Amino acid sequence: MSGSGKGAPKGGPQGKRPAPPQGRPRTGSRVAAIQALFQSEQTGEAAETVLDQFVRHRIGPDAGGFEDGRVPLADVPLFAELVRGVARQGDSLDEIVGGHLAGDWTVVRLDPVLRALLRAAAFELSSGTQPPARVVINEYMDIAHGFFSGEEPRFANGVLDAMARSLRAPEFQR
Image (tube, rainbow, N blue to C red):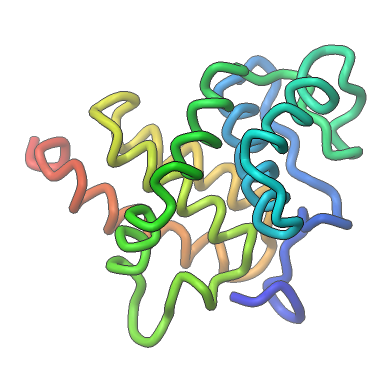
C-alpha cells in the first residue's frame, strides 16, 4: 500500500483530491480531516496548528476550488472533532487499526493517506454509536475511492468492516 506504482493515491499531496459529493458537508469534513491528519504527520506540525490553518484558509465557501486542496463544503465541528480525536487518541487508534490488519501489515507500513483514513474511521467507530457503523464504512469507502485508484479501497473495506464488526458488534447482530 505504498504511494508509488500500481495503486498509487490519486489524491496525495501533489495530486488531485477527491471532491465530496455536493450537499454532503459531513463527507467534506471527513475528507478535510484526512488531509489535515496527513499534513500534520508529514510536516510534524501539531494537529491544532493544522486545524487552524484549514479552518482559516481551506474550508468554507470562500476557500476556493477543491482541486487546490480546499473543501468548500464541510461541517467544521465534525472536522475539528475528528482531527482532535485522532491526535489525542493516536496510539490507541493505531492499536485498533493494527489489530485488524492482515498478515505482516503494520500501521507504519500503510500509505500515509490510507493510514489517516483508517485512523479517522477507527476514531468514529470507537467513539460511540453514531453515526451507524455502516454509514461510517460507506463514507470512508467513498473517500477511499476518491483518493486511490488501485487496491487500496478494497484493502480499506476489509479493515473498515473488521473494525466495525469488532467495535460495534451489536449493530451487526440484527
